[in-house]
Image (spheres, rainbow, N blue to C red):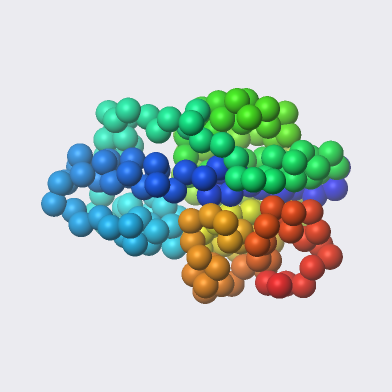
Length: 210
């Protein structure tokens, strides 16, 4: 096996922005209906670690989790991968190790991957039920699969993804088809910018942040 590719799920593999934003808004409203929560507030939660951002709003993570458990779960079965993501993932999996690392729960991610016949491409799914810090999950995946930082890419769609990848010492890949704009992603200083899924195939041969 060559490299370790760590994929975020929402905003990288599936288009779930509007559904997940509504879910988070419902959670926060259930905790405190007076909390302001705009579309921009939602995106702000992903400038760093999502769960740390929730705590910074003076909402304990366990309280947020309990509120989330009382709501109907997000129906990921109605979501599908972004165009061209599935064949790119399949191609990368032939000679590399692929793992999903997400702020979401593992079970619905696994359901979608199975539904879309993509589960065989990934060696593991590390959701928030495993650890809430993506940096910790990145380090866990490297240790589990025997890879060094220079052999590992973290592929995300938010500035927070880029920053957590940097904290783990791995190469960060910011995709522009997800939740944060390219301008916002660049403020976090990603190692690579991917504007189409096919860009992920040739990361090693491209210039930094090209």
